[in-house]
Image (cartoon, rainbow, N blue to C red; front, side, top):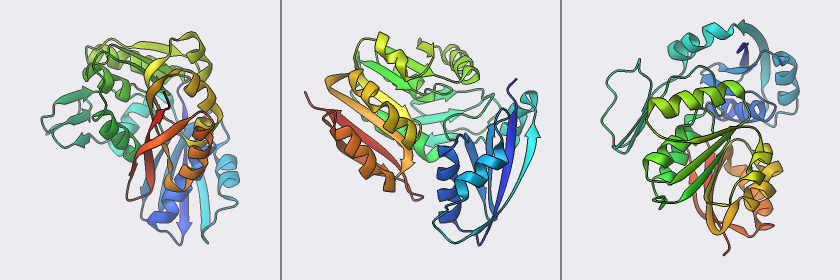
Length: 282
């Protein structure tokens, strides 16, 4: 079942810095999406996990003085899509270049790349900052006739954009089965051909090295799997990484340097979410 636990975290005092940092800590222990507000945030995690215990553990060493009141609510799988539509998912628009929206959205501006999705579960970390940052970087890449691997493809947004921009082959790898199935639907909905794999980072070992590697996941997974990402990237190839804060960059770049991968460009949102464009030495 695609059931979720909605964990409510009320912070006292509360600020944007506190909710952003709390979301990062919760993402590190498995929470998938977040709704910040003036009193704290609501975080979502699979119902197979003990949401309250994980939240308490994640926030126990919180570096900013704040008290947290934590409660939870069960959300049945069949209710998740309506919950998402009503309370969270909003169109993602990047100028006149990209519009990501669902069929229930109206007044979506015209864009060069129009991506339609039908979300049935949380995807990525739920932070549109990271998704938007990755798309902004993808718009700069020379993708025509190139190969792409999108690790943790989620519902397939970044993979679809890469294919729309002319990539010859795009392989999306996703460990979460509902997300993987949703990505298959989205490829069909947008009339693009993606090679989708249900699996983890070990799946890249069976693939030819790619010209581009994307990973919009989180700091800990990226650090754990960088060796595999590097092995699956051609010399001279480029890597896009996101799903972490700027304070994590030094740690990530130190790991990248072991594989001769170096920063070319950095995007940082007002909230501190960061995306890196890197290149592997030829």
